[in-house]
Length: 56
Image 1 (spheres, rainbow, N blue to C red):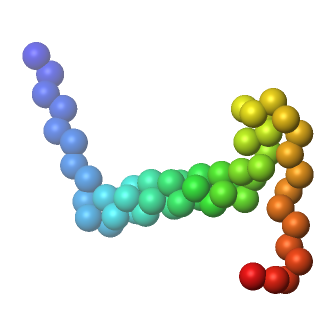
Image 2: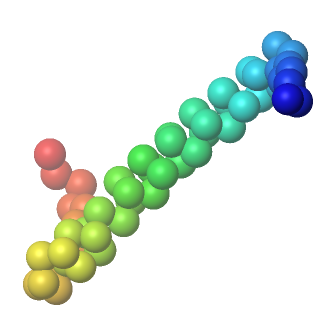
Image 3: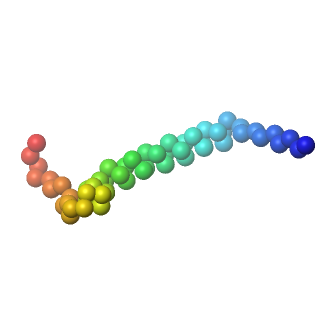
């Protein structure tokens, strides 16, 4: 029987966590910016991107 001992030092561990957090936030940002395309794909209708007129 072979035993494998795995060790992740604190520097590598924090880097792995940083990469995971960055990937999640990047995916969230991409979904937010292209939401109208995703919505039109699943909705079956052609949707236009929101227009900004400067009024709130």
